[in-house]
Length: 279
Ligand code: NAP
Image (cartoon, rainbow, N blue to C red; front, side, top):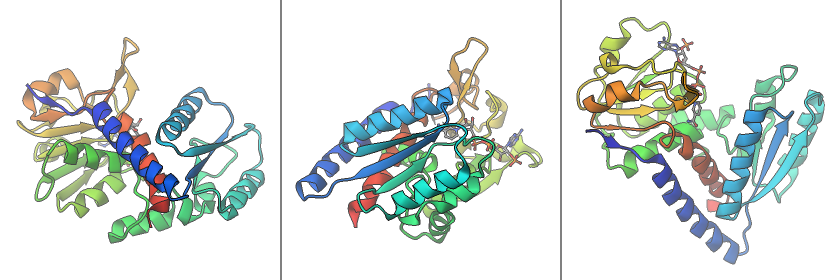
């Protein structure tokens, strides 16, 4: 029987550690605030934004809410970002994605000051990550590293395969695993003989965005499997990129969906907010 990597429990542990750290900063007169910008009222985005605000409240970070209409022009959003960049009371700025189609996501994300880039999406943050310098880490991959470390799963020297090369998951995941001295392979939609490659993995990370694609044939006996995917199955229940039932008996440890990687993303966002005052 595989060990379940309990993301909910680990996320709560980190939240409590951050809460304590924030209260120490407050005693020393340092407050932390996060500006959260949502454009339009996409239902899923509203849920994410609310969860982020709740996490801020729990930890003791002030959240400043900016709700803009869906037809807001890009210039107006850029103006707001400039104001927040210059506001010394604001530590972090987060623009909830996706943005409406008339806006250029790249332009918006680059407009956020690298000093306040708590999502870790700015090219300067990405560059620092690959150079191994201190900086804001991309939240979901940073959460995966915490899951592994806090479950006492050794990363150094391990063969790690990531299925997916997106800018928000696959690529930063590779950079973080390299930092931990893993041997890293990134697979994607043009990869040949995918099963042969994934079967080499001591640690297999599925960030492919395809419901239950990773079946037992993709997994080595005794591997650790981390499932980043989030989908709804035929019964409208949450599931991941991994076919959990098919893989569970073959592996050493696995993250469930829900309750695995999901809860870690927001917590690592909170960690980035606290990072703004650590130095
Ligand atoms: P994405 O941008 O769609 O990227 C998917 C990647 O998988 C791409 O690199 C793609 O290759 C590759 N891919 C697609 N089909 C493939 C196949 N048949 N074989 C091998 N590789 C294939 O997705 P993402 O944003 O990285 O997200 C991945 C999953 O994680 C999604 O389910 C998403 O909802 C979830 N997610 C969860 C969290 C969380 O907090 N838990 C956060 C972010 C994302 P190409 O590059 O060649 O197209």
